[in-house]
Image 1 (spheres, protein in one colour):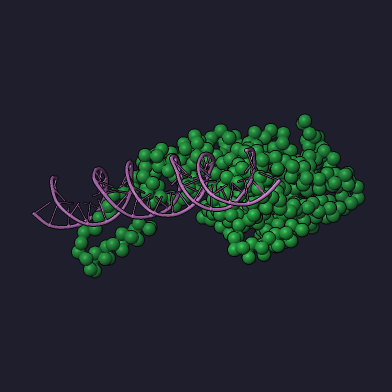
Image 2: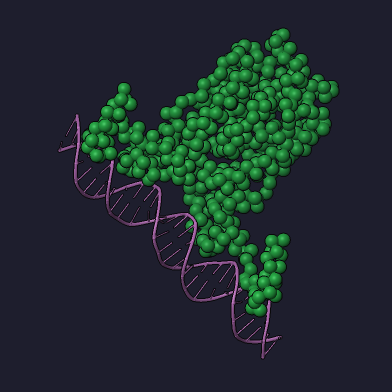
Length: 230
Length: 230
DNA sequence: TTGACGAAACGGAACGATCCGTTTTATATG
DNA sequence: CATATAAAACGGATCGTTCCGTTTCGTCAA
């Protein structure tokens, strides 16, 4: 589309005013792009986020800095592309939401821990605190993931496992928040019992069963209270 | 007392035409420490995290860089002290956990949004991704806050509002995680309805009331499933 | 078809600015 | 005298940009 528009404009200019020859020139090198992305990942793995710089990536990739800046305006943009090219964690679909959510967290933590994706993503979050464009891109990405993760909840709603008025993206936000802070605070080795307990609290709540009349009244009114305001 | 002393000194210094502080001589200067912490906060507010540097803080505080490095080994350490000197958000104690948690989130979001503390804390989280000491300090701080926030849940347990076997720090972790990601993704303006809904999901869960026998059985077994494994 | 041409991309080098963490210098104070 | 301080300076690193020579590509004329 964009390239086609530019080509069209060039032809118009050629007909109207200037018989000069116009070449499209050299093409971008996919090999260079891949080498830069590979190098970015390698530098992050080997030198950590504090050792990550465009200079280091350029050196590692045997690429010119202007080449990197031509395609990626910032460190954050580069990190985002590195993260985007990495494999995504799938949503389990076991027919049971607790199993799905626990399985999802376990897979996500293992993925973040065992590959470079954890380092990439936490670096990206850090960059987003000082780079507005990165912050916008991260917010957009997070929005998409909330919808995707929320599909597990939507399926549970369709199965009648979860109340019909539950907002799946709010639940997904809770689960993702829990994962993010675990990543940011070096807790990707959380034990499964805690994951199960946490998921259990979200699914079944924490209110007491036998607290007495006050709680019983509260439970009878639960539907009303939880009714959406929008 | 302190402010009065400084005010007097400013008048004296104005007369002398020298804006610098008096040296405390062969003693540590509390004035310098305060000036540095004040400057750190001001630089962060005015220039954002991307404009925050030890160089800028030194310039602003009219302090030598060695002086800063003598007391704070890193940007993160400085940011942590800036955050620690700021007012803490109190735990509401209304006798109702939902109100307490919603009130807590509202206060925390407002605090982070309306003062520099939000900028400080998110910068600190970002620093913790590249500085191991900062990461350890942040983890320690987060641990303390989980216990503190968990007191709202402990009180609810004592009231019989929350099941006795609920781990208060896990609940606090969920709430804090939700807050952290809101801070990191520029969502401190979240509407109260969403806060209430989120807190509601944690307190009362999201499972369906009338899903049929499967859910009823699950509810009868809930106590067993939620039994702690440790 | 071949060769020349101009445009664009490339890697490497260099640039001026800024910051880093450290050392040096001059001054003030106990 | 010993110590802390602010200011200045230091060598090194990175930033984002410009410059340079070379390569690649599409176009055109012979």
